[in-house]
Amino acid sequence: MFIEQRTYILHTGVKLADFLDAYENIGLPVQRRIQRGFLGYFVSEIGTLNQMMHLWAYDSLDDRDRRRDEVAAEPEWQRCLEIIRPMIKSMENTIYKPTGFSPIRSLPVECDDFGTAFTWQR
Image (cartoon, rainbow, N blue to C red; front, side, top):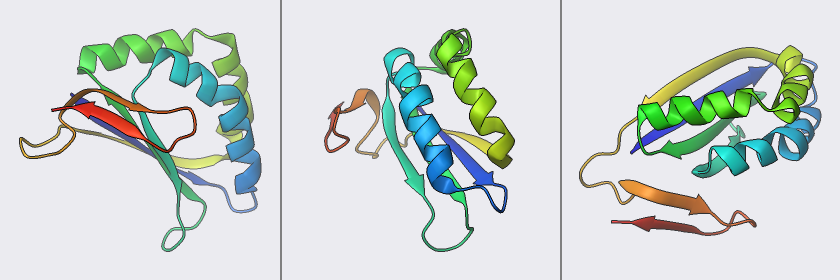
């Protein structure tokens, strides 16, 4: 299993609420349907301002590539990108592999529809 961390910093003057609204209502439904493994979306409170980070779990890097290609082919995802890309100043992507003693080491890792519970296999 691999965890992908994506971090975005928005341009000064961009309203975080505008970005999050477009992503939550247009982009995220497409990603959740195809990518699965959504672990969470977070915004900075202290430190770098206008920063957000989200985490996704994948079986393998090949699984990640396949799912991301499927998302990229979706018209609703492309519509979301047209809205949010101009808001983004910088992006960083990191792939992590859990250690043998990590409590999350395999899929499924799924967040329920309310974002309040995780299930995982050991």
